[in-house]
Structures are given as structure tokens and as C-alpha cells.
Length: 159
Image 1 (cartoon, rainbow, N blue to C red):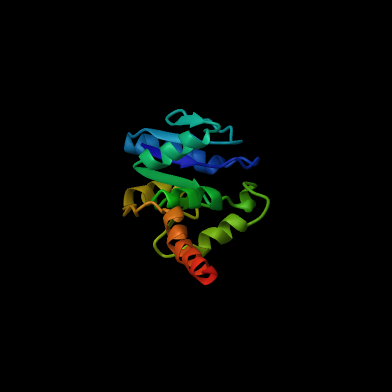
Image 2 (tube, rainbow, N blue to C red):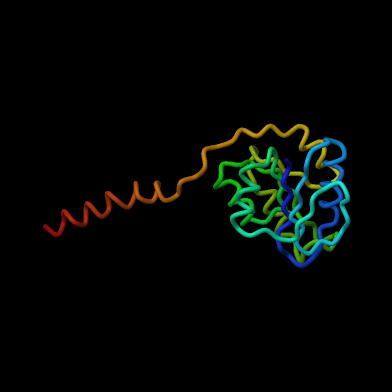
């Protein structure tokens, strides 16, 4: 399954929905699209307007390939689960967003990230995408590793 998430922004992202529909046809694979405000038909993909947080996380975890708009929250959630998503930024020139912050975010991503600047290039990017899954981040363990010695130092100082 390929999971494509467009976020909840009020402007449509038809170009990515159309590209996702083409993925389903070309790859013969189930493609689930969380489309938000986009109302573009995609007869070969499975469309869902929104997903509850636990279902969204499950799709991120289970998908063979994750494709996201360049929303930082979705991106960080995917990375926290150890995923390396294909990122497709919304472009204000196509009236997909109010400004170019998603384009700037995508340009700022590191060389290990898969960025598709134009949705028609999504098929080639998904075919070429080799995801080396990273261990899911355990931010609480890292926090505790830093916080524990700090507390120990404070307690020793009070004795």
C-alpha cells in the first residue's frame, strides 16, 4: 500500500491527487489518499478526507511508501516513526497554498530526503525510492538519559 497525505489545508492539491491516482494505475497497487479539502476525483485510489490520529499513524507505519505534502507536522510524525517519506510541496503558483513555505521547507531538507518538486514526477520517484527505515525516535528515552543525571546532580548537591 502507498499512503499519500495532503494534510488539512483549505486549498486543494489536485496535482498530487491526480499523480496518486496514476500511481495506482501504473503500479497496480493500493493507494490511499488522505485528501483534506481536495475534491479532485481519483477513481483508482482510495480517498479519505481525514483520518483520526491513530489511523493516520497506522497508515504511516504500514505503507510500503509514504508520500506527503511538505507540511512539517506530517513530515516530523513520519520521521518519528522511522519513515523516510517522499515529499511533494504545495506550490502557491498553482494556488495550492498561500505562500511558498512548503517549497522552502522541501528545499531545506537534507540529501537523504526524497523531494518531488512537480507531482507528475511522482511515479518515477516512487519507482526509484529505496527507503532505509530508521529506528523510530524515542524522544522520551533521550530526554530521560539527559534528565536523569541532572536530577542526580541536584539531589547530590542538597545532601
